[in-house]
Structure formats: C-alpha cells, structure tokens
Length: 86
Image (tube, rainbow, N blue to C red):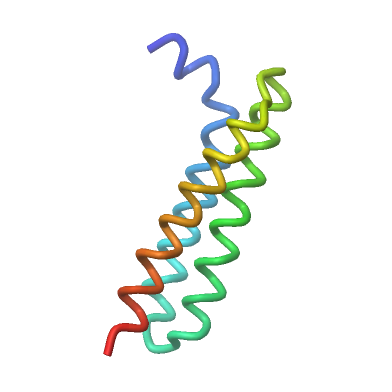
C-alpha cells in the first residue's frame, strides 16, 4: 500500500486520462467517428504517460515502450471491432 501511495501523483493523471476517455466515449455514443478519434487520442495519451512515467523512474527500456504500444493497440482493436461491427 505504501508503494501505491508513494506513486499516487503519477497514477492520478493516468486515471484522469482513462476516465476522460471513457466519459467522452459514453457522452458521444451517437458519433462513431468521434469515438474512434477519442479512442486513438486516449491510447496515445496512455502510451505517452507510460513513457514519461518510466523515464522519470529511470527504468525506461524498449521492452516497456513496446508493452505500452501493444496494450494500446489491443485496446484500439477491441474498440474498433465493437464500433465497426455490422
């Protein structure tokens, strides 16, 4: 628990990024194109946050960047498949 409270200042922006993405996704449920743009923006913000977070903690490696990119891509794939189903 101490570890989480120690890094709380780093995780609150991530929570804000993801919350804003979910909120915007539900508010603009009538506009599929805007939802896709919002999902891409949220994924980019997530990857950016991860890179900045690990750079601050001096444990940024190529494998960490690839991990954040893969998770963001997986999330975008799921959202695209749900939004663009016929």
